[in-house]
Every structure is written in structure tokens, then in C-alpha cells.
Length: 195
Ligand code: G3H
Image (cartoon, rainbow, N blue to C red; front, side, top):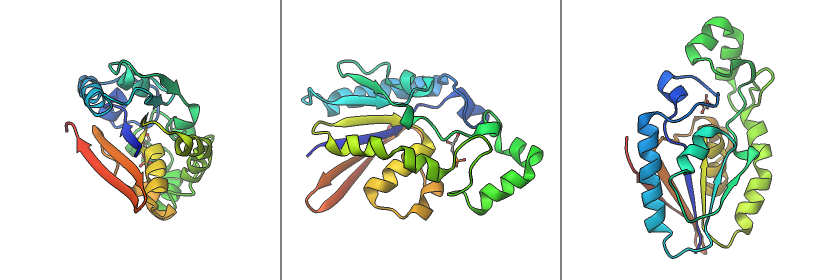
């Protein structure tokens, strides 16, 4: 059985400030998670010589993977966070104040709402298709280090959750979700490495 390990990047500077999108580096907390994750992966995948580490093209996932040594790393643009278009870098409070109609439309239908010049959750789900095909084709373990919205979509696919649950699914920082595809269905374990 070949596990897929899903995790968000370590806490980023934008996470600390409550800002969406961007391409910031990790906070101190986030860097600590990167070390703990590397430790975990080293033990968990010790005997799995052919495992690979997949990240997005954004700094916060690449930096989260940095302390992991001994496994090939692959960057996927399709694993980048949902593109929040004109709202990139703003806090939800700022969006509500400056673009109240956008804020309301997103609240009404978060799955279909597309940020102006950005993406919707449905767009993200669609662009993940090649990643999913490649993941299903793998025979060795894969560690996917990505982002909240993207992991909500990926996890939902493997756990067979309905589309409507995707945008509000809980996807905490600093937690690894391990998925195993077995004959009896999908098995899942969670490891919370820190707060
Ligand atoms: O920066 C983007 C967030 O990770 C996505 O969260 O879709 O719940 O606003 P949200």
C-alpha cells in the first residue's frame, strides 16, 4: 500500500497577518514545522527509496520542503493556491470594506465564486485533474505540500466528499493527512505535529 501524505505549508507571514494569497516566506513557527515535517517524513518513509515530494511553485511550500533531504522534489504550478486576483494580499476585512459586493457574492456561493481576474474553487478543482491522474499513477509514496484551498479539493476527491463541502472543509496548518487506498476503500490518519 502506497500512502499519499497531504500537508499545507508551514505558517507564512501572510497567515500571521490574515492576508490571502501572496508569495511570502515562512514565519518562525512555519520554519519549525518544516523541520518537524522533515523529521516525520524521514522516519515514515525511511524504507521508501522512490518516494517523491511535490510542492507548488510558491515560496512557502518550497521552503517547507527544504529541510527534507534524500527525496526528489517536483514543483507543480497546478498545486499553487487559489488565485485571489484583485484581492490578492488583502485581509478578509479589507475585502469586505473595499469590495462589499464581492465579499457577499463569495459568501453566497463560495464554490462557484470567481475572484475578479482570479479563480473559483471550481477552477481549482479543474486544474487539479492532471495532478490527480499523476497521483493515481504513482506506485511510490508521494508527499504533497500545498495550500488550503487546493488541499481541500484534493482531499475531497480522495475521501469522496461532495463538491459543496470543499470550500469550507477544515484543513488545519501543521497537520499531515495520510491517505491509503486499500481494497476496502480509503483509510486516513492524521498527525498534528504542532499548533
Ligand atoms: O489564501 C487563500 C486561502 O487559503 C483560501 O481560503 O478559500 O477559505 O478564503 P478561503
